[in-house]
Length: 249
Image 1: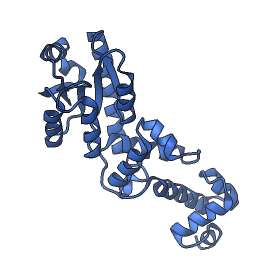
Image 2 (image 1 turned 180 degrees about the horizontal axis):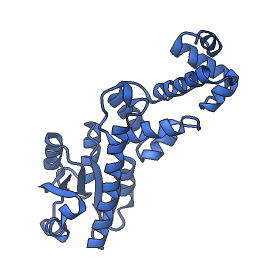
Image 3 (image 1 turned 60 degrees about the vertical axis):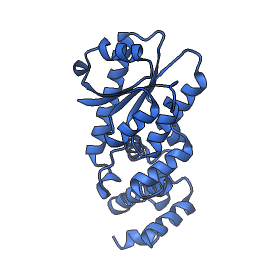
């Protein structure tokens, strides 16, 4: 069962959400409730839930601030925001900081909740599968439990030969560039660009060992569009050029 924390200052709304669906039938269990962001943040730090269903407008600490503080703490709980019609700027910021979805409170229905929980269930299952797949980066380090970092690792593993930038990865996980950069370094111990280069160089080494492709073709096939840049990065990481490496394989 995925653990859910419900954060809503209006008692009536909180009770309606709690009683409207059979959580266990959807694969979730409601493990806690809070009426403001400060109370919720302490609960999240003590026992991180898989999902935080959170109102945006609350006293003491609003939902957006709660989301930001949760991300600063390196906690990857999924967030679904409960919001009022017209609060577009808060919704935009929430999505930038990694909220998975939002639900309009005034028109919220059982169908909306069930569909949203279904999507979150799929996201959590995919993140768990990505962690257990032990991709090229994960095989060299402790298991990473942050879902967005896992998504980035999996994306790079599958698309290393494409044009990948910090901006494109930030859009992929719907987070700010500075936040993604800091989060990835915190969780993996290396910068995003270093990780990407390492993946590409390791893929190039496989081809140098197992094919007779020219060095420039290999560089292009793993995502380096500039031959000199490929040789520079390869030498920096291995201590030798691709051609020299091939001779000694």
